[in-house]
Amino acid sequence: MTRFAIFVTIKLHPGKAEEFKPHILANAQAAVRDEPDCHLFHVLQSEDDVDTFFFYEVYTDAASLDVHREQPHFKKFFADANHLVAERTIQRVAVQNPENIA
Image (cartoon, rainbow, N blue to C red; front, top):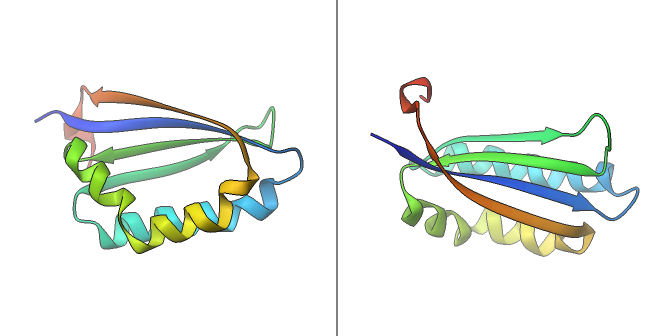
């Protein structure tokens, strides 16, 4: 079965990485812990530009992402950290090797 995923690139306002990090890590942890259709949520930080983050999130299907966006932990993350974000891009992708995902 193919899984639905998103690859998100976040560019923060300069110098905001340390303020941003606890918010996104809490959101990612809660998503994997509390959402049965969130199979993976990796938070990556660029080594070349510490104010750039990437998220790789894998869900059962696109509807599961919609459910994720309605969760209290996502709404808290967005309310608490969105002002730190300068740019955001979201790419929707299909996982071609879902057997590698728990």
